[in-house]
Length: 194
Image (tube, rainbow, N blue to C red; front, side, top):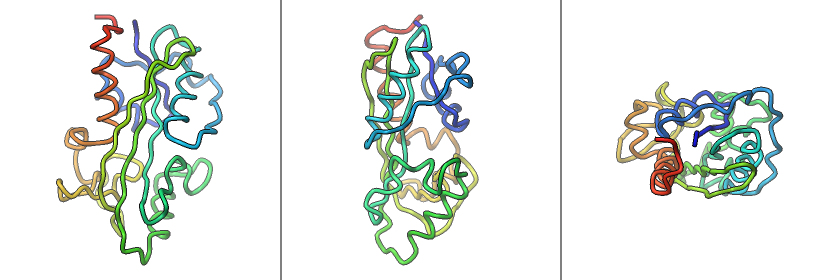
């Protein structure tokens, strides 16, 4: 069976291909209207998107829902991470708003969360979750990665995710954890074509 993904985020697509192995973007994905993300958790949003998009393909399909949860902001931006600064917000706008909202905060604890949902023909098969804890910087550092990576300081690396290369980030990242769990499940269940 083939493995498809659905994402409009080029950074995520690169990570999907690097981490999940033989994966393809869902054919005609750009012609399919996006579903509304009405869930209140990463799990709900990932599952709803996977169920929806899997009806358009002839194989397994996965999507992720991921974001940054900041302790001092009560878990925000959370499921709204991609649109924190408004609809169609850029990474720069989201980062700038987060820096502004964190001014004067002494609690810098944050975590990246990723939930990958796997579906087939409009039915959810399973979800896989990954998390990585770190601290928020006062200003972006590094130009690697995407999203909030330049603001996310990972103490064991002594660097932000924006300062390390993709290979090093993939050792610990939330998305890598979730995708590795999915890949292990697919291998164990022998669901993919050899």
